[in-house]
Length: 410
Image (cartoon, rainbow, N blue to C red):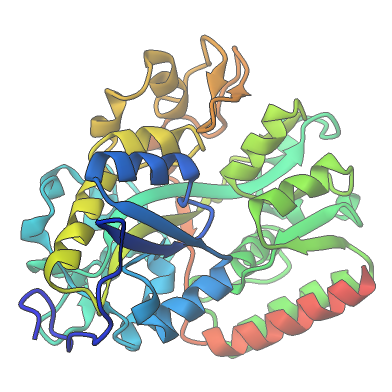
């Protein structure tokens, strides 16, 4: 048995090329940036290979093929499935050098005494590995996932076709009749369903006992609402990647839709007038992190811990800030950002100069202001977290039926 893991050691050997160990990272485009891969290789003296897929493929590989990766780079709401299959092993807090600097958003679920925790898969409730290997919020010496990248999402709109910010100040706007045929949702059940649910509830179309853990009857009622709109031609598309989301607006197909920060960045770099809404009901939040494959042991386990520590050491957090994302150790990243970058991305102040994205291309124009205010204001306004609900399997079946019919319509 590996002293850092309760799981049997895999028979799969560590992979090496040209004398350097190779670290295999499974994840999505959210954080598998080429800039990060190259820098990690240089700083750690290893080869880093990214296996970049969409959410559905990534989660399947993580659960079913744990010998195919060393690091699982995903989100807390994707954790239950891989934990159930014992595909990943606990992380020893004593081996995370900056653990005390990780902020309270994942440790307690709140930043500030008056913050609302939000419903759904609050990361703090599944951060710590309990003595019986269950996940919970009681602090122990081991965690399930190292908290890293996170954000507070809503929807985006073409500001040149919206008449006043107040008209998009609620999630209800996402299902507004004026956007018939010009709206799109993200095609990921544990994410898209909450955009739709928040919109339906805000519009007074239905209510939920617990929006973060819907009953079968609530799922059916919500899907019936979405089906009715699909039949009426309301949805232009369902997308899976930030690039696909941005393309819909670039091609002039949509005016309002689910959107991630990376998609907004693509649109801003092309000069399209697009803004993220700051709904009065609160954001749909998510929190990413890094897990250790159960197959890791010995030297490769040491290397994996080096990679985890590197991720929260400062420079990577500055890179993801230029995507519009936040990091769990923000003060470490501040020294790797210009004062103008910090003020715009974290303080919510107007950009006093043009600001680049991770690739160096100008993304934010001077004078621009990020919607929703500072990091701390946004973190205190969470309505629900991305979630894998108790009825997730049923939801997935209903969601796939909806998307499948919509694709035929298109």
